[in-house]
Length: 246
Image (cartoon, rainbow, N blue to C red; front, side):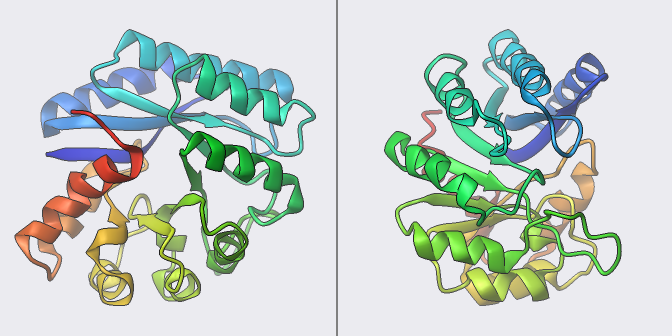
């Protein structure tokens, strides 16, 4: 079974992205795809409302395929209400933080505390770049700071932090942090290195689609691990983290 915990629909191309993801699910026999809707880096309240509405539409139109994250900008005055509505009314089962602020900014603290009460995971974008790092783009150490402050939180660090050698070591001691492999795996040893550092039980399959499904899937297939661990990374760990009933 394949569960993709990290994909997107993007502003101004919602329907095209929906159809691309549905086609991918059919072609690759993906059981579930987790989405968030994204637009600009620091969206205002109106844009957040639009993005989450389009993600909600996707979940409710294709409930057998899609699950989703409510996307929250902690800088907005209505951030807590966006989270509440997303979980209690719109059907999301996780929260997404992107690059509006660092994930360990105190603006995020009330959101984490509410996610702990809801018992839902938080997907945190983390992406180390040698050049063109975004102003508030979180790194592995930022994620580790959150994990240390909130050991009860269920944290999913995206992309292995982009550079696993930079991103994985800071979060390794914190068992409440899992990682997804979406959108960053270009070196053959990235996944094997991560398995050695934190074990297969904390690694989830993701693609960042529209990024390449085949690149992420190939990494799982070629990983130096047991078949049981391969199944955990492809689906079992996601089922456990999100409490899925399939």
